[in-house]
Image 1 (cartoon, rainbow, N blue to C red):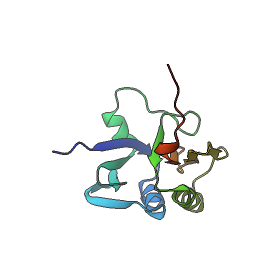
Image 2 (image 1 turned 90 degrees about the vertical axis):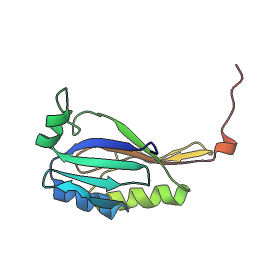
Image 3 (image 1 turned 45 degrees about the horizontal axis):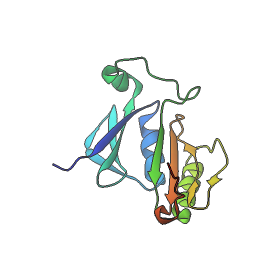
Image 4 (image 1 turned 90 degrees about the horizontal axis):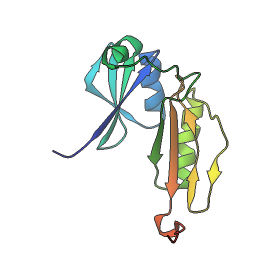
Length: 137
């Protein structure tokens, strides 16, 4: 079996979140969906499980973070090029997300940050691995 990642995040409004993630270019796998959860397909091996607060809390071993006040995690998503970074971020903003800080451009790496309507943080980035500065030890 190929290794995959399923990231579980809490959402306050499942239907709003489904619409948001579809608006930024992801699809839904309705085989893993009900009135409390839905699987968002990011890529062939990366999935986001969006879970209502009660459903998420049923899995969690610690209290749910209030992502409107604190950062629980940041999800860095590699993109094909700078234009793809801008495209997904602009789609997120148009779909009700926010951009909490300006872009970062290091020449070899370009990053933007957006938050979904629940405050979950995503950082789409492009990186030219051939141009990464090397550090001697």
